[in-house]
Length: 289
Image (cartoon, rainbow, N blue to C red):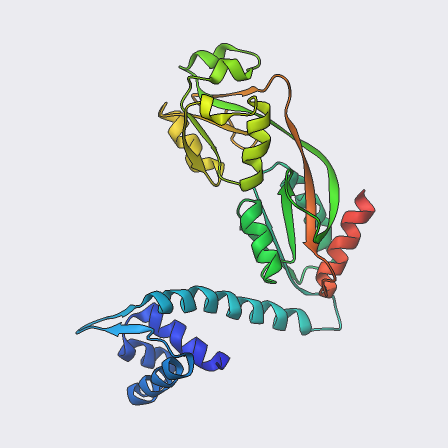
């Protein structure tokens, strides 16, 4: 499958008609239709269902669209990082969950961009499972992940930062009046918990080893939307401190007792071949420590 034909396919998927896609690509409709038919024959799948007005992606078509976007993004970042070798330029891609550790990285990026203003920075937000998957496929250079997370197959640096766990509650909730909460305090409280796989184990251990004794009504990926449910007093959220600003809101963060903390790590793939921009970023991280 040629990248040129993949671009044709993604354009058709975006425009939803052969005619509009042909205009965008400056091709004739018969030429574009022929290219798409040959792509389907090459892959042995049907990518589109052709309707009277619009085309609809099949399940295989949706899969190719999602992976195709990632492929072209990887090609673009690779190309960018190979050009302009006379100066340090290019892209750094980094993903991470919600943590105040990004402020630490922000200071590094500030110094990096002062020295090398042609470096571009691309951020991706997701939990550790999402981030590590994109590191594995080469879509991210680095990941900022919060323990517990399996780091055996990655290189990593433990940052000098600690995240602390607690519960985010509506100010009308009785827990909002406490300085700290213990597992027994939240047994009947409707809870949202992180859907990150290993976090479940850590929270379960703090809660006493059996989450079935607690009223878990759902999960969240990133905290902001979950906090909106707390504002409406739908549920309370087990989360890390400092991610949601509770000042002048109807929200209160109450830390756990006994404390539950987590280390923050910068990770990357072993034997990773870095661009000059990424090498300089990593050098500055190590120097700051």
